[in-house]
Amino acid sequence: MTDLLKIAVPNKGSLADGALTMLREAGYRQRNDTKDLVLVDDANGVEFYYLRPRDIAVYVGEGTLDLGFTGRDMLLDSGAEADEVMALGFGGTRFRFAAPGGGAMAVADLDGKRIATSYPGLVGAYLLDKGISARLIHLDGAVESSVRLGVADVIADVVETGSTLKKAGLEVFGEAILESEAILIQHRGRPAPEGFDLLLRRLNGVITARDYLMVDYNVPSELLAAATAVTPGLDSPTVSPLAKEGWVAVRAMIPAKRAQQIMDELWEVGADAILVTSIHACRL
Image (cartoon, rainbow, N blue to C red; front, side, top):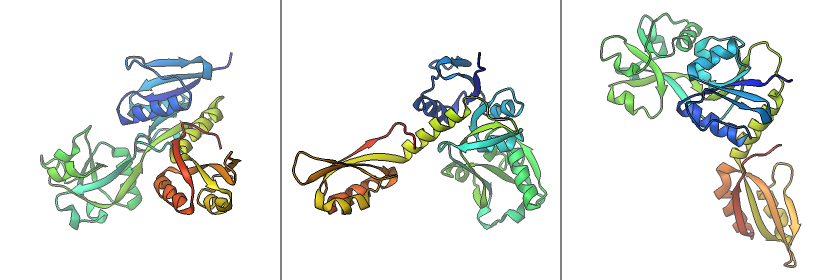
């Protein structure tokens, strides 16, 4: 009997929601009860383990599990023997330094400072690379309060809107420490397990489907060249004759971000009955 592919999935938070959605779209079973810690998908030869997001890199790095969904920040902070296989396109975050009056500071000013963070491994590696000596203070959360309470001079944390930092009297400064997002990781140096290539193809299909939409429209035959210049598709558009003499139907994949602009351009060319629909999965 073939061994099941063992995959770690975050058990809570935005990473969990994104991973479960992506895996379902890729055709894998996922748990419906958050109390379930393990789910076996016999049809696809996979066993899923639902773990704390911060622990996933450790399990994969130790070789206990084959693959894992986690954040790039958590992988780098862990120092685990695991490598990023692919970025998954969700769960994006940015890590920045912040301090009172940070607008007038530079990264070089961190030398000798106390820096509070929930990611000491990640921040420590960044400071080492920059040749900066600072004292790291590891806190599990709410690091923005550490300066006001006199525990730290600076914080290094995830910055989304920056509103929480402003309320704490902090300003970001310097370049981003890291641009993070959800990633798939694998044990370092281990050969790809059975089922690995299939998983990658399916995940890539989901990611591509999210980046593209399908457009269908009708256009007079004499305007076909101008219309397909707007919608060249990935290889080429599909063109079919219509019952209406002198007209054809066209179907093509288009970038989702430009969908409205492309519809406008097609209308100006002379196309009509323009429809844009979602793609749930694909293979390219």
